[in-house]
Length: 358
Image (cartoon, rainbow, N blue to C red; front, side, top):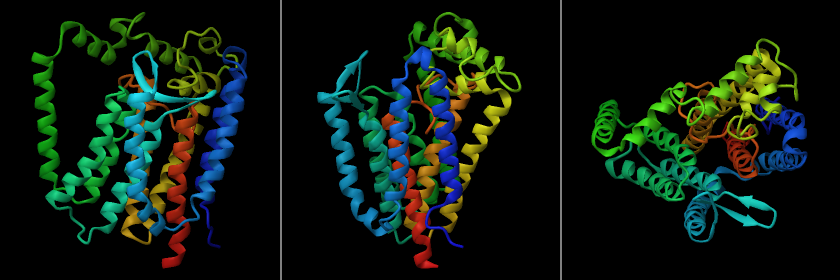
């Protein structure tokens, strides 16, 4: 029996959302019950959007792409001019009790535009001009996000560009040249462009124990929380790191630490299995895509989400620098959750309309 909506993808999404809500419920005495209610409402809206956005066909999204991209760039410009300033970051619009982060939604416009551009290409291999266009589409958005400044969100645009160039058949020698150039530029920056205090900050990111009560505090507390969960965890709402507020940003950047402390190795493995299922179904959708446009769209979404999952988990475990990148569908936040569900709705459009071309 052919399904209009991929049931395995929906199962993964529901499982991740359920784990997120369980974590917020357990943290109610510390963080307040309002977070749970808002996240539940956003989750319900997100699931509805996954279904609703699967209905239009790919031609509709191809035609929508220029408008969506223009609106994305306009939103990023406007937030720099009119956005709410939080600690030197101008990345949000305040709308009554709600805050909207345009950079989360602008990523969708970038994905739609790049997918439409590559989908219309008659050649499987990008020309120099075509590659430059892809870089310009993504680069313009990255520049505006960096100006907010929000380096964490800006980084999540990079896998979109990398995946697009890979699909476009950029030769291996070009990747090698870009890697060498990046290494050389990094070495020059380290030797001549950074002040001593900036170098110390980088070294602390790489080795949190250099400053365990300063720059390395978050990662140190996160690793303690994950390790204290052992095999089966301390139970939801019973983790000492979470309850005593030793762990900062426990409902956003370090939500996985709270879950691991509460449910242990088994719970953490179960959550990672849900993400593996989600990403594998996106990959399967890409393979089943009826057109090049659908293939590109699914791969771009999958690359972005895979990058964000890997970086957040690596950050929580102290393997990667702390960048402020959240865990999709799990970390608290309406803009992040809704934008992720919109992206999954686009993937489901590819899945649904594969039947029309089979």
